[in-house]
Picture: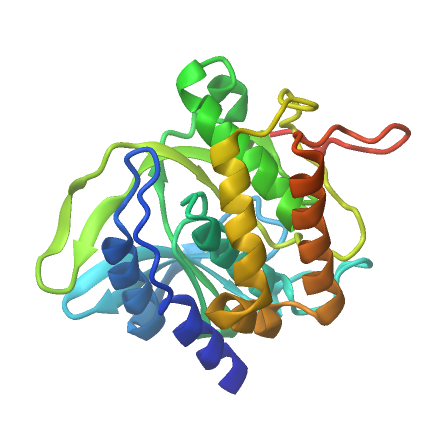
Length: 279
């Protein structure tokens, strides 16, 4: 458990003050991360239709209750192409990369010990279940977030970006002193990143409408910043604990590929490029 504690401490010590598309302020996220990392976890029940054990839970912290999803390592079903017991680490690594980019795509997530052993604890987003990617793509207001998500999924080599993994929900601001504030403006979140970061190409996603288009300069600047962060400092140290050396090298390679091509990735021919089921 020493590694899990070290990872959690490093993840929520990052200082990133960027706020994207009306998303939550970094200070509010840090308070939630501290609560998720330090509070007492109370399981409420097993979430249905999950391929691995995922528990709807509540974290009790300083008289406050924070809703979360707890995915214990021992509840992960073995996969032939991913090392056993690493999915919770990949969930956490996805949050680290999202924060390092400043894109705020992934809800606050920590790796810590829980009632069923070590696992990922992710802030639960209250969302409209009838809104998912196939609705969002018809609304131009979602385009900037979907463009970031397209690049993000390529970076983390997401093997399972289903439409239902794109949520439209509020993130209420939280502080230990004041508790929950009023809901911030709702926007898009991305969840379920357990099968990401493989060192071999695994990308399967429903989001391909930007394929071949030029990446915007602002997003290229974010990618260049990520390239530096992945190579040194706290982000590098944290990802080194969560991912294997080949996986971290592959992440670096994918960053370089996007910076070199300056175009959104296109689906390879003669390969399965979509997840099933798509929602």
